Length: 437
Image (cartoon, rainbow, N blue to C red; front, side):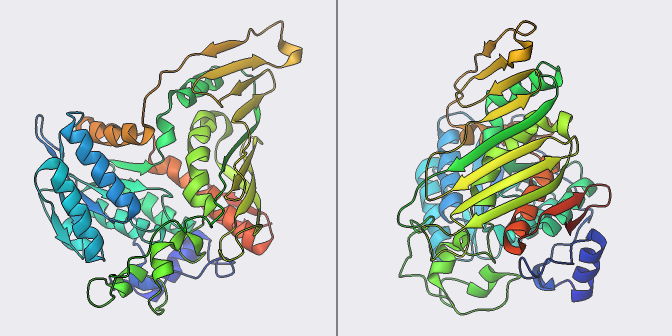
């Protein structure tokens, strides 16, 4: 993990135009775990027709173990021909627990590693699912791509924009590798139907959209992740490896279990929750609106005063076309905004499973209202998992890909900077640079 120099990291940040002001928002990424962008890897070895897809899991905390159980259940149910052959985690208790649960469902126990690089070194693994904490996403994903593994990386795609740009360049340098990001609502048919309506000009010019992810957690968001008294750094847990590129600090079981509450390790509501809503909404709009170019955001500590990250956030995003998107997030009130895309001629309502088009008043004689019925696809996260396995065989580009993920990370990163600096931030996609305005 110590293969890059501070000069390399600094030169990359300067090239990306993101060094100025970054320290005021979040600590700089030391070189020890700084991902190297654009490296060409060994290339994939896709599963052959009729061959069982063999995958590894990096990160076996709550989300990672959930993936283990659900994938093993899908395979046992005959919905996919997949075997989990390896898991990796810096905590032996977590990795062995996940391995035992996998064995109970698929009959065979995966190999267990503390160092994820040993998992990536195996030639028999087709793909890797990454469910590590946010500050490790980019490093794990880049290393997996270079190792020739297809990836499914949990959201947010990365912790910050420099890491997202590094991952994007690595994916571009390895176009034969399948890269899917874990934003499962992109599988909901209503957003695809909305995209067709917008691309066909049926709402006129998309002028304004809104979405949200709001819930109410009286005991403090993410405090429901339990602390195991059996965790013992230096015995069954490598604390320094978990910290990765972050400055050394004493063992803190609260941080280890509930890292989403801490600004050095997570963007909180923005990256963990709002990406679920922003990503499919943006997929519907992207051809009409282009890149995000300006973000202004505010965050408050309304109820959960102990959490470093905010429990109430509001974002205003402007895109190349001038389109504006308003996004609300809360963990102190569960009433959100209606999912709605406004055009000058018609609006698209997306609160239900279906896609409803209703004309605006001046165009009611020209446009008829209509409802596009959308099927119930069941568990959308299972559908995204199954989609990953499908595209690993077909070698098609997944919808929840790194290019869309990068554009969403522009929003996540600039919103985070805006909250902590009190300024709006602009992004230039021609030069891939950000600046306060």
